[in-house]
Length: 262
Image (cartoon, rainbow, N blue to C red; front, top):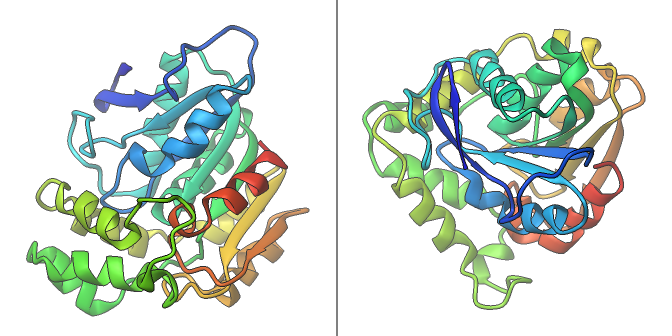
């Protein structure tokens, strides 16, 4: 569905199910240069198990209108606007990579909106390799190659997807190639400039689950420890033999983890 917000008309995937009154809700937020399609499997599952699903394309991404925004907090504002426009009072907020920073900001700054928080493939601060930033600034294809290559564990790059017929790296490559000009650079810069993660972590009051891959080289597990320790009563789910792209590499295990908190 399409939702009118101050950031433009945004596209929201509902898991192919209409929202119903009095159902719990879950919001999914994608990472750099991506869109709602990275969440199709969990979106469809929860939509068929009694949840109202909001898997949004952030402004300027995917099927959404509006201009891409330059800060994590403004992306979080867009999430809150979508919830307001669709009548969702609160939800489990689920974010991956850049999306995890967005949901962290939303949970801290809009506490009444957050029933639970799930941070997948996350760390704060979320630094960006200079080569990636330079390539993104020039809109070079190299940044797409780097995100794709570094985003998967070595074993995943050899194949063996748990979803038969799906080419993991290829699907990521094609998705990033669809990103509008300058979107990847703006997203990466927003991640690098986000300096209030620890402060926001101290403000989180809802149940929180970290889902981290033990072979993630983009946001290594060890780099999330400070944020884990900052958020009260946070729990950690360690995904073995998995890189940064957990939704692709371990879709079933990820869904099992989400079910425990969403």
